[in-house]
Structures are given as C-alpha cells and as structure tokens.
Length: 549
Image 1 (cartoon, rainbow, N blue to C red):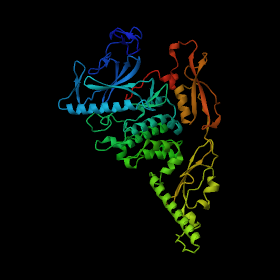
Image 2 (cartoon, helix red, strand yellow; image 1 turned 45 degrees about the vertical axis):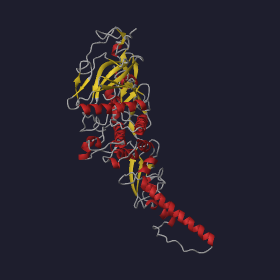
Image 3 (spheres, helix red, strand yellow; image 1 turned 120 degrees about the vertical axis):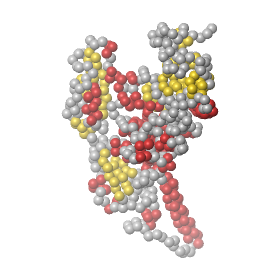
Image 4 (cartoon, rainbow, N blue to C red; image 1 turned 30 degrees about the vertical axis):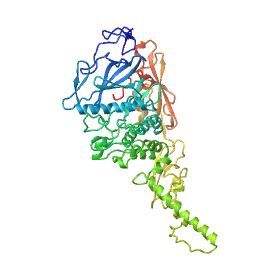
C-alpha cells in the first residue's frame, strides 16, 4: 500500500498537495518561486520538499520532511545561478552552454563537501548532515533542522553585551566543532552570527556550510561573504585560505559578543585599519582577552594566530595568552621563549659540568669568563630574569616609587572591581614568573578603582523599553519578570523593582529585578505580553534556523 503524503507544515498525512491541510489549515498550494522545486516534490522516495527558504551562489534551500522519521529537515539543492540555465520539465538542472564542465566540477565539489560532512557529523558544535543524494542532474544535502534561533536573533533580544566568560562558554562547542572540521581537512569560511544556531534542546551549533568557490570573491560562483567576519584573504581568488581563516571569523564573532559591534570589514581595514580593540570599546573586557582577539584578527595571515585550539586556550587562560605574546609588537613569541630557555639550560649545564670536573680532578681549573652583571644584580640574576608578582600590591605605596621596579616601564590602567580593594593590582601582563627576553621590559598592570557604585534611577511607570535604556545607560545589570496585573498598573510598564529608587549599590555584584505589569486581569488573553520574547526559550518556537538565511 502506498504511503500517504505528509503535510510539510504539520507532518500529518494528506491526500495530495492542493487546498488546505485538514489538520493545520495551512495552504498546500505551491508558492515556491519559478525554477525552484514545487512544494510536495518527493526526493529519493524519502523526502518531501516544503517551502523555499533561501538561495546563495551554491544553490537553493528548502524546508523539508523526512517521511519515514516524520521530522523536519533542511534540503540544500546544488543550483549555481552563474552556471545553470534553469530546470527541465522533468526537474533536471540544465547547465549553461559552454559551462558544462565547470558545472560538473563544481557539482563534484559540492558533493565531496557534504559527503565529508556526512561522515564527520554528528559532532559537537556542528549541525548534522543526515544524507546526500544525487538526482535531477544535481546533488541534494539533507541537514537537521532543530527548533531554535540564530545567534543574530538572540543578540537582538539581549539588553547588554555578553561578558568574556559568557561569550567563551557560548562559543565553546562551536570552536570544538571547527577544530574537528580542521582535523578532517575542511575549512568553513562562513562563520558568523547568522550561521550559528542556538537550539532550544542543546548547545550552539555551526551551520551555513559552503564550497570554497562560494566563500571566495572573484570565483566562478556568486560569492557569499559576511562583512566583518570574512577574513581578508577571502576577498581575492589569488590568495589562499586556511585554518587561520576560520580563526579570524571566530575571533570576530567573539568581538561582536563582548563589544556589541560588528568588526570593521576586512577590505575597509586594508585601506585604513580603524578596528578598535575590544577593551577600548568595552572596558570590562580584560586586556589579555582583547589582545588575543587582535592577534587572531590580524590582516596578514602569517602574523595571525593559526589554530583554533590556540585561540581557545588563549581566551580562557591569561597565563597562556601572555606566554604567547611579545610586548610591543604583540607577536606570537613561543619560539623566542623556547630559544631563551635553551640558552639558560645550556649555561647551567656547562656550569654543572665544570663543577663536576673540578671536583673529580681536585685541580683548580681556570674560572669561566663571566659577563658583567647589571648594576645591583648577581651573575645568576643577570643570566635568568623573570617578571615580579605585583598582583594584590598597592600601586601608590608599594609600586609607583619603589626602587625594586625601577628597571621596568610600568603601564597602569584602572578598572572597577567588586573583589579587589581600590588601589590594588587586579592583574598584570606578563604574569609573574614569565621569562624576560628583552631590555627595558614593559609591565602592564590593571589597578582596581573599587566597586562601581551606581544610584538606582526612578523607572517606576516607564515602559519596558524605556526602563531598559535607563538601566543600560547607568551600567546596571538587570532582569525583567512579568507579574500579574490586578488592574492598578499600566500594562507592560514597570510596576516595582527590588532596589529602592535612589539607593546606591555595587553594579558589579547586584542584579536588579524589574517587575513588568502584564495584561490586566480582564484583558483578553490574546493580548499576551510581548515582553516574553525577551528570553531565548519563549522566542524559539519560530523562526526555525535554516543555516545560511
């Protein structure tokens, strides 16, 4: 017996694709654009094509249904507009005259990419490719379609930037997934907030896969680049991309999360690099974190951080970050540190051998020539110098005019801190114990300004939007909750707060709860509070993310 068709909207059986679905009431008529597969098309006897969703230089994307499992999927059809001359009546694609060979080779690239992804996924942080099929003189890639939202949508709902720790946690699975791509010899080249999904039932996942030609300007396909996130080498077909291309994009996404601003596009930066550091835009971003992002977003790939594991480690641990950098140029200096370490080891080994030989022979061997130590230092101190520990010390009384640190150029910046007393050092760069490899070393320190005390503004009666603006401008962390409205409050306005107006408090420690009055008790339930969409969970019923949309 032939299996019934499934409604591509609600997955219930239907007789055919005409009229409205008797279960969900949605139209079953074909409204897909001319040239796209009609709604209800069956592929490989396993999938039903639903609504057309989007297009890029590689092809067309549809919402679809996996018939046997009765679940929604995304179907990507290879359909390069620059190489294709439309579709025959039987559904087969027709390459343009004289472009047949290029059409075929590009189709092979598309299939090879998705075959590799099919073998690699499921994997942490990567959207799963479920199947790859050849039909209609083209290739179809079937991808999972979880309920959720894109990172772009999520950021639009937030009232404040993410902290570095929050950004690192959110992107952790995506970075792990990209590292797995690189191990398999694959480069994504399209990492951006639009292509990161936040499912309601799991951690962030990367989607938006595309071929090399799609993600390179000047190629044979209509390119799809994401300004601010695409690395400079992607803007020329004559330049090579590599793992460092994805490192640039991951750093750019992190920059967006912690600063609230999309990075300056690479072509504009190459004319005049006006990209501000993350720390200068958002003082709460630690210096080491900001330096790591700058290193990972260098225009020259050779001077850029090269791998995702390096980026992950440096963003997590300031000790790792500071060990990777040379002061001033901020260059990755692992080899210099290693070379200096080898020199010290060699000198110590030579001294040990000399001592053993002297003890064995009992003769007074000539003293080895010694270089003159710096003033006030012993020979051993001159050979091996490390940076001192200033964390916790008072800047004015213990550091500023102390002879102990006269040999350093100390650069001091200040930040608010709820945990470190005012005037004391919060952090330093390089960290204590790091080997000195240069003369006149620079020591950067961050000194506490004490807690950030703010006064609670009077926002009672403000609309939710205006209250959020007031709190954001004051630097106050807050959360909003909907409360029942017995009729005495204006709908969707602030009814009360858990901090009294005029109270001064530590903005770094306190999260203010703001209670928003919901609909009045006698108001129709159809006027449900729109503020519920400010949280991720309530905003994820639709839209369902579709990768490159």
